[in-house]
Every structure is written in C-alpha cells, then in structure tokens.
Length: 116
Image 1 (cartoon, rainbow, N blue to C red):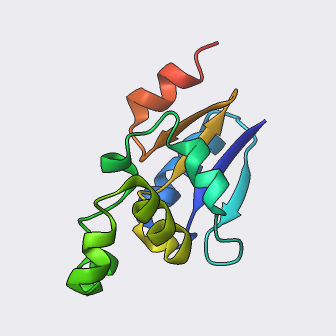
Image 2 (image 1 turned 180 degrees about the vertical axis):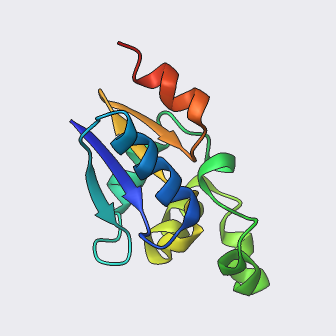
C-alpha cells in the first residue's frame, strides 16, 4: 500500500500526486489538515528520514514560531512535539511505500522507489 501525506494545496504535494497518477500508482492521500499525524507516526517517519530533513525550517510556519518554540526543535522529542502540533512544519509530502518513508518529491527518487 502506498500512502502520501501532505496538504492538498501544496505545489510539491500536487507534483507528487500527479507523478503517481501518471505512472498508474494508486495511493491513499492523508491530509495533514484533516488528520494531523500522531507523534508515534512521526517517530516512525524518523526511522527513515533525518529530523533535519523532516522538520521544514524554510517555511513561513517555522518563521512565525517564537524563539522558545524554535529552541524546542533542538531535541528529537521537541521536534516531534512541534511537528505533531503544527503539521505545516513537516516537509511535504511524506511518502510511505513498502514500510519505508521518504520526504519531499523528486521524480528520480520516486522512480527508484517504484522500480518494477
């Protein structure tokens, strides 16, 4: 089962979903806004994705955090709590395929993940 997590109006999520559709790959879509990821799911993602990659420090959500909130991200536990509370801090999309997790979208990555 293939699952893609993200926000429907995110351009990168749209590109990933389009790539999957163009390649005939059925995927369940989980909208962060309607179903925020639980801390245990984020921990599972961190088994394959480095916290520095998964925690998006380039977006407006990160810039809107105060210094204390940003400092919370210095620990893995703090970063997980921040991402669970504010899913917009998660690099999108997160792809789940065959028990592995990937963050972001690059056509070359998806091609390697879905090699037949």
